[in-house]
Length: 174
Ligand SMILES: [Zn+2]
Ligand SMILES: [Zn+2]
Image: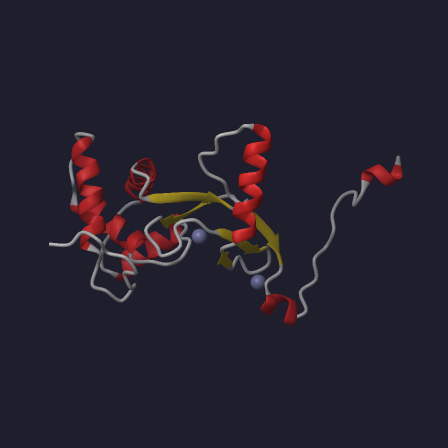
């Protein structure tokens, strides 16, 4: 039996190996592996998106699962603590979740402030900068995140304009 499961497609019927990993984590913590927890985990593991709790609740409902928000929150908390899932705060007033088992476990995000589309990118240059800065400061990094906020291509094409609020460059005024 092989546990290596790289490049799992979202069309695959569930992702049993990942569910099993989560189940193992729960058992190690002395927590019960419930079908509700498994259902929430399955939604997150089979999605390539950055899901909000509302998205997850909606997906569960489409699957015929009626699972309350409190259970979803608690399960997400466990998934994040297991390190199988990453939590993001893109400044929208709610968190988003994505599993860390994709082909791109380390990646950065472009966030459209108009339509909330999240685009992922990878950058070798960024790794080089991180390494250089790490050496200069004798710093041992654990993780990093880079989020760039702005307008996606289609919002720009649709003519969306960004309004600048506050002072643009206070130093020039002084
Ligand atoms: Zn957009
Ligand atoms: Zn991502």
